[in-house]
Length: 148
Image 1 (cartoon, helix red, strand yellow):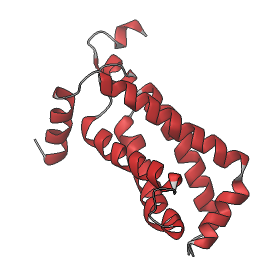
Image 2 (cartoon, rainbow, N blue to C red):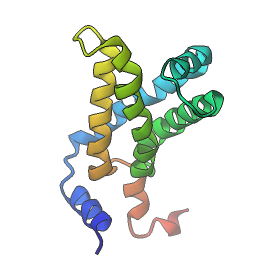
Image 3 (spheres, helix red, strand yellow):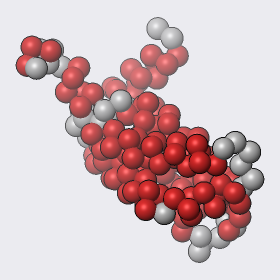
């Protein structure tokens, strides 16, 4: 059993049910942020320009929007949660350390605090996984293949 399997096993065994509610709320927040980015793509592109992002700005904008929409939906449903989290972590690291650092680390910078809380929760769900109230758990039950 390698390290990743050990972490997954530990996360599956030590997963309180209330944390599934937090996962669903986190997925809703990420999905809503993705919808906000779709509605204002120019503002997202400007954020990338301000951080001197060297790759294609529009490809980065599309990655962020796609990852937030699909990743948020997957987190809400509990479908491949760890994969959805892995897609979100680079975005949130960039949001915390590159985008929000321009506004400073003050208590008035609510976007910074939201990004920081979401980043911490993403690491929690990277270890903990989906939980009991998820499609992953439902599909792991014996007999699921026969019910399709």
